[in-house]
Length: 637
Image 1 (cartoon, one colour):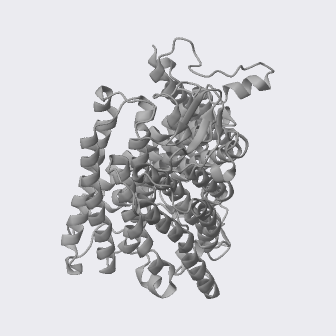
Image 2: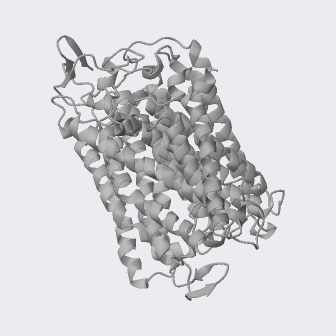
């Protein structure tokens, strides 16, 4: 019975009731109007009831959010009831673990919820990749039907992106308040709502695979997506709700950063990660609407017959209603206006993690702190000016190509600032090669592959030949792994002792690194190699004549090695660490505010107000102090 009281269980139950209500509402409405329940008599199964299925998906989300309790306080406010704010378990006597399966207002709990859900999504997406990589290991293998293969690669892409977004939310929610000396976020209830709406979004995204799938890839380009199988609608809805979470979370990060910093913490005394999270929030708040709008327009086009993106026409027919009169290139502009800045949304927090860890383990000040901070803002702003380099072969106006090529090359400048600052930090340092540091260094090497393979895709003459090949796949994976996955793993290892009070197994951590890093080099460079030899992406099989079978086999083996290394990490952090060595408040000798309180941290992290009196990265400087706790506690190098 205790399990049935968990918010997650009640949310799923509420979501199922909501789905049934939404489906019945549409079908009942059609019957009352004297119309047949099927929307399209030419298809069978759920696809014949597509509008009802879409409305049911929306009501599933509403029912889930009501059932889980994410809107309970707001509904009580609407009735005039008081809702006292509770730090800790909201129901007395609830075990500690249950907090992570129910609505909780602690930013630390919400950060863990984000991170674990993100890891689960990454696991689902990675498992899909392992399945379809088996088919690509050798030429002319066909054990996956083309429609199943297309669904798997489409789901792999967007589920992994959803997992990365949740990982970004986990790091930002958990770390930003700790790093600025706040005990919570500015809007705790909104913070909980922003997390929990991800759950029905993720469920819809995964459900899309089993109600017909979709064949568009993760981009969902029309006109193909306007005529794709039914699953594409839940793909659109799932991304829409995850995007809504991103917008709400970014607002919270920005307000928290601007209004809740500790006394003495000026902007240029903030940790670099906070700068990165703030720059990321700017992108989330101002660009996410465009992918939501573009997907929503295709969704409405399918069920109401509005030809936003159908070329030709317009004409009327009984099946599609109004068809034609639209422009599919408009979708690409809207999609990429978000989706290229989103690349920086994914990587900026990771680059901030690298900047946080290098001075700790090099025992040196961070070289060019202000330049690194400003480079994050520059990347966020210039990132809005480069989206159309994804569209050089789309048929857009030719005169747009050169301006977007130049702006694409320009964005490499602030990224280069970070690389040179990292090298300056490492130069002459007393480097400790602990697992978090290894992953930070691995991130630099992997992100460098992504950075060096990017300019050929931003230059018109070379992009015309490389676009839609596996070269793009290799570049994108290097950018995502180097910019997010490796730093995320570094962050997990680094802050794990602070969150749990126990140390992970260092040998297993290093085994994880030494399996994963060389395997990823092989995978990414192998993908780039087969792309340059003619392998198109989103192709279910390939001919023997391409002579890339050996390289594809190496890519597949490398993928399985990476997958195995992640399993080792999961065993290390979530199983063996329960018997890990207990640690003190500051095992890494960090200057950060959060490392000056006990491990694991108390419910209210800062019992006394931290007062910032120095610089955040003055490692190795005798007598340097960053923070003092009124009245007696001090922290330093």
